[in-house]
Amino acid sequence: MAIPFSPVNIKFTVRRSHPELVAPAKPTPREVKQLSDIDDSDVQRFQLPIVHFYPHKPSMAGNDPAQVMKSALAQTLVFYYPFAGRLREGLGRKLMVDCNAEGVIFIEADADVSLHQFGEPLQPPFPCFEELLYSVPGSEGIINCPLLLIQVTRLKCGGFIFAALINHTLSDGLGIAQFLKALAEIAQSACEPSIPPVWCRELLNARDPPRITFSHNEYDEVPDDETRSHVMVHHSFFFGPNELKAIHKMFPYNHHGPQNSTFEVLTAFIWRCRTIALQLEPDKEVRLMCSNNLRGKSTLVPPGYYGNAFVFPAVVTAAGKLCRNSLGYALELVKKSKAMATVEYIRSVADLMVIRGRPNLVSSRSWLVSDVRRAGFRDIDFGWGKARYAGPAMAGIGDFLGASFFIPHENAKGEEGIVVPICLPLKSMMLFIKQLENMLISKL
Image (cartoon, rainbow, N blue to C red; front, side, top):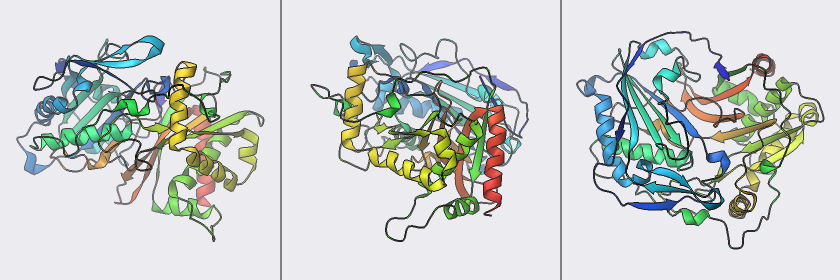
């Protein structure tokens, strides 16, 4: 179990309506659609919580965000009708969507709290989040359960909170953002999405015959020898322009090639600090997995594709070697992980899923990082303007708490930066914070 580790400590009451099912506004095809062999791996079989905080907008006075959203949702599901269906599991654990138009769960609510009470900076973990995204009994599963749950909570200041729980087998971060942009467009009176949704999941199925052409260290069979008795805590960190500039300076300048990207240096910096904070035995293996999306890097998937189109190439080293060496060593491993993500690599992953029965990632002593800065969550405007915060609600993907996101964010000073939610054992979190401070203070 993980608990929030946050300076914001507020309590408020949420009055929720009875959860209801919202079906497509018009008849949709009654069919069964198979997911791809990238979609239905064990690692995708979880529900991703996202949350958007919207301030009061005087020009929208008299408009109920819950009713606007509910009406737009029914219309959007006409185009994204698989979301209104239910997952079934076939031979070989193959997942498919029964497009039966049963609908998605929708909850409207009111909270006796104002947006400013959530504090500055507005970033995960959010207090009383379980009240802002209610877990409806019987909806927590992956198979034969609703694929999407949305809760719109009106605040006493006139703002509102949009929270959603989305079955990740149907969409990755970019696909989820595409769906939400369509919902926002229709909420603002569009007749149809500007980007037509594309299914085509067969594009990422295993080859016939399947053949594994890479060493996929992210799916190694590794004994899980981690202790589960410690208290896990959630916290997030904002890296603004000054911090990012200081971190860049910790790495050698490349005079003869492309410069280090912000993703590369921040990932290397956090991974090394995180590993030091865990105080592992020097010979223990640690893994870094960089989520890498194939969109834009090839013509493998067409525009409008909203399925999972990414892989997690893992690099492996010893904890002692990572902590003992310079940050440059960590940086080279980050770059290696990124370079591995090719079309052939994702083909090999799809084949591995079929050959090995859709295994899960190695979670023991692993850190996974997913960069959602270009997903466009902050650009989703339901009519109330830009969200104060938009994106994943916490660290972790399902039961794997060793996953973080790079989320674009603007702090109270108006500075653009990156929020990184992290989950660690309490003792390690304290050491991690100290390690960050020691390394950054000397550079700032």
